[in-house]
Amino acid sequence: MTPPTTTACYLCTEILTDGDSEIQVFCSVCKRRSHARCARSSSGWPVDVSSTPFVWTCDDCKSCSRSSLQINNDHFRAIMDQFAILSNSMATCNNRIEDLSATLSAQSLTLASCLEDISSLHSENRELRGEITALEDKLNNQFHLSSEEVVIESSERIKREKNVLIMGIPENTASEDLGYAKNLLLHIAPDSAEQIVSGIRLGKIIELNKPRPFRLTFSSSEVALEVLRNKSNITRNTHPSITIKSDMTPNQLQHLKNLREELELRSQVENNLTINT
Ligand SMILES: [Zn+2]
Ligand SMILES: [Zn+2]
Image (cartoon, helix red, strand yellow):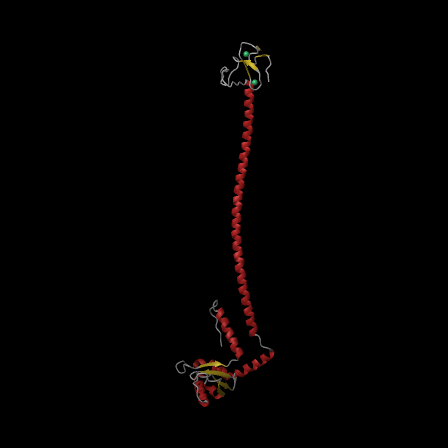
């Protein structure tokens, strides 16, 4: 841009003309003209036109550029403030994410322990089912008698109520076995010897030194009961190898066996249970 040929000095307002002996300078921004002697550098000294490159800016343009710099600074500060707010928000988000992550891992642990509990409950349930099935089988076996069998069982029991079994009488002739038994009864219930109806050995000899049971049948069940009640009168000193038992049916023996097994199981929790035979 070519500056106008005639104008006033921007600072002293004297007219400037081309070819004037005075040195003139131009503002690098607005291109206004001024005497070199009127113009001032930013430090307040007269401008040095011999410096290369020579650049001068008038006071108006300088202040204008300062204010635009000020505006830029203000914008920059506002942006930095926004950035600080965003940075705080991000830090808050990070903290929240860490909290959530900790909660999640705690819940994972709880879930794992729940799954473990469920699995142990499952196996416990399986074991209990097995035990229930076993108990059901046992009950079915205990009550498997038909009505016909019940009648036979009852009459068999009534018949056997007149009997007692004596274990441990040395094997001998039939009359000597009976004599031995009568002698025993004198220690137990003296009158019962007169009530004996019969006496026989049961089963076959398996071992010579292991005598078979000797069964005594009395005239009534009351006599047999009296003998059983007083069986403890045979002291260990006089007849150490003798035992006296009631004559039970196979079903009664099985029932007794079941009761003993149940007692065995229950005695682990309860201490004062016994079976009276
Ligand atoms: Zn001037
Ligand atoms: Zn200017």
